[in-house]
Length: 483
Image (cartoon, rainbow, N blue to C red; front, side, top):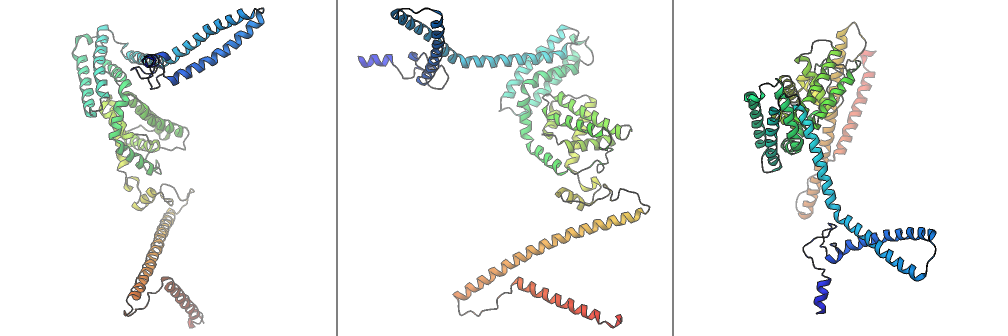
């Protein structure tokens, strides 16, 4: 009977409810829903607070009230202690138990507030619509699609091609609805562009990372390949690309720096139109730099080389993934589509770039790609001052380049000779050891002469060459023709 009473009173077995402190253990009713460990921690903390509080109260009471009898003083102290001890403990218990629910509610409130702000910002694209029916219809259509589209984006089993197809179908549907439905009859011509911006704000504010990460995963190898290719072409100059750019000209360097930053920010934008606007901003800075340098009318022949140079200097992250994302989800206008195609052409040119595209010889291009120093060529003048005889300068330049190439090749020959000598020496050593081992095992074999040492042969050859050179010098001194 005593055992059953004890078990029902101090039941430490889990009763199905976890600790109120969310520590992972089971709580108990006698510990106010806490586990034993959390209850001790909460109680000890509350006890320390109560002791500090009692010390302050006792000090203020002793200073402001006259002394009383010992009996009444002790009873009042116990009563005050019991009342005040109960409140801090319950406060600590309540605080610890509601901590998790409070944090969840705060996070939920912040997310809801952020979503509300994003929806309000997106709705600004529809403020210029003349009729409320058209505005309500657009919001209803987008909300329905956004809800279903978000579920598909969250499902990892759905392939990215399905998401691309669904988004493209919705774009065509909403465009056709605007063109055929009578409620949009009084709207302005740019309504389609404003609806496009509204749709992108609603859809990609929630689903951008889910969509783009799938594209980036599939395009990871292409992104890495482009990054490595751009890194290996860091030495390319505007002159090599026939770009009309001079970074030493006033303000041109700063303008190109802005164009480079605009292209780098392409990866940080979370909507297709935001990425398109980064490309257009880069385009404006490039055109400004070209006008400053040349003052001529900007056309494709001078813009594309400049864009290639900016791409090489910017080295934008995940460039292939961003272009693929824009090709599938963006709705660019005519001019925007043209410059997006220019960016894609610049990337393809960089991937296929060869020596003849830069006006270099195959050998110079190979040396540049290996990072080896190159003597001045036509891109970097050998002399900065003018001379009358230009043919002599050109001839001297060719001789200097030929000499550098001969020196480079002779260095390679010396390295190959040293490597061959090392391998041959090792071969001779191994062969002699093998022969000596065979002679020890089979003494009746007729021994052949040991293979000559390579170092000894080199030394003898050197001595013979020195002897021959001395003889030639003596013969030159005694040559009758000199008398």
